[in-house]
Length: 198
Image 1 (spheres, rainbow, N blue to C red):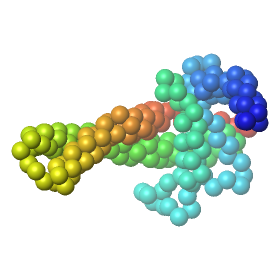
Image 2 (tube, rainbow, N blue to C red; image 1 turned 180 degrees about the vertical axis):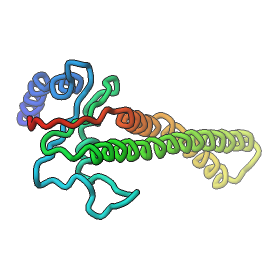
Image 3 (cartoon, rainbow, N blue to C red; image 1 turned 180 degrees about the horizontal axis):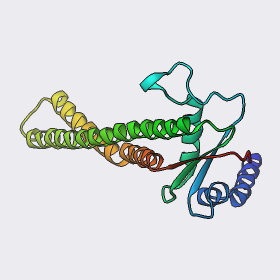
Image 4 (cartoon, helix red, strand yellow; image 1 turned 30 degrees about the vertical axis):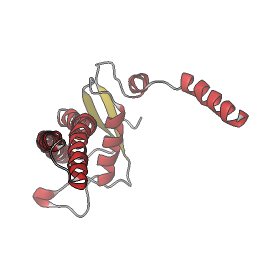
């Protein structure tokens, strides 16, 4: 028991010195102009574009999106985003293509998340109506019907449907909305190129 208590006290001490997410975002990402900047290093060995994509379907390497997504996750939504590529720069035509590919990628995610929000709302409404209907039938038949198995089924099905509606609205919707807003933040981001390597 004493080991557990000492571990808890060590974690509490550590918790006091770890900066909160907003402080970390300000220290790590925020620039003087008020934008949060995500820096990507373009050294000589990096393939910026996915080697399997070409033509109108040309796309960035998945590692680029993974890094941007990981950094976006840490930046509060109140800050506008700048994505800055440093190091060996592509030519101006490729720079414009990179801007368009990033905007297209996150626009697709934004549309998907908007559709997910619509489906979530529809699911919530349907499950609410279904749950209320089943529970209404259950309470209406409770006094008159003597089949306990059927009544138990109605009760369980009604409460499961009602809980599914609550889960869908209060738990799932928040995560989908955050992904939607994060994708919107990325779509609106400024993409910049800089030759400095720091």
